[in-house]
Length: 286
Ligand code: NDP
Image (cartoon, rainbow, N blue to C red; front, side):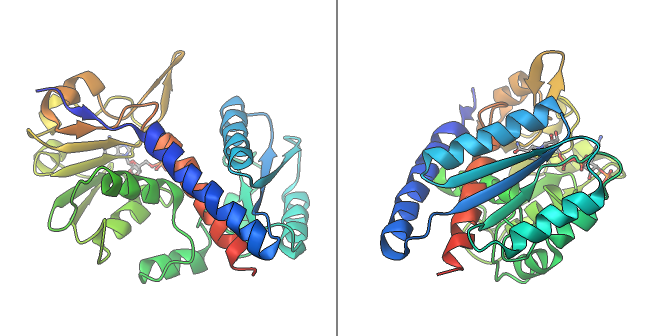
């Protein structure tokens, strides 16, 4: 039986429309327009596309969006000066430094310098700590997008075995934390796998829900999956001129009950969640 394909683009569009309504209400009630500032350092073409998509999504939702493009030679001190200025600017609600940054810049130093009240990527230790304790200020965009996809698809997580492939700070680790929290979209039994995990297939075969975030093109194959599993593919890998996920879509579709495509699955949800955090940051100021 072919898996149901989860349309992340359609869900993301619906969510962005909800945020557009909320932003219009914020303008009406308080005269505040959510404003996201994005710093793009260097000329990585993939980063430029991601930033452009974020800018378009902001503008379509009635948010203000400022993209500051800085040369690849920008020093860490120069970037930190910019961040300090945005931290102090009351008209700026969200600050995002697009990763990766050129090698002379230590990414953690820059991310830590962003005000926790404007940290719409939810990378600051204070915001990560609040999220871990189950009282989030902001939500980590990609993991929260995955959780929202499952909720909006009516896929229950409570009591289910969720296997997360990957333990990065951006996706895998916060993803596991969200699933283990109490409440809607949580209450799961979570297993996290990484590059040192032995017998990967034996573990993934026990998953009710499998989230792949490893950055390995089509590593997840038929033999990793049990019939009826829900497969969420976070992976975004460029292979030649094609974008492929971490899951072999054709093979997985034959066994899974539902699956996200790449592109058009998790990616659009990440951007929608970024808008949600920017809206939350703006609301913190009124
Ligand atoms: P990282 O490279 O930071 O982390 C990859 C993780 O996968 C690591 O924990 C690593 O283990 C683990 N891993 C690597 N190879 C294997 C393997 N063979 N078996 C099991 N685990 C493995 O990547 P990110 O978390 O940043 O991103 C993961 C993927 O998601 C990428 O394709 C990225 O492009 C995509 N992505 C997509 C987004 C979207 O919006 N759709 C947003 C963010 C990322 P170890 O820790 O041991 O090294």
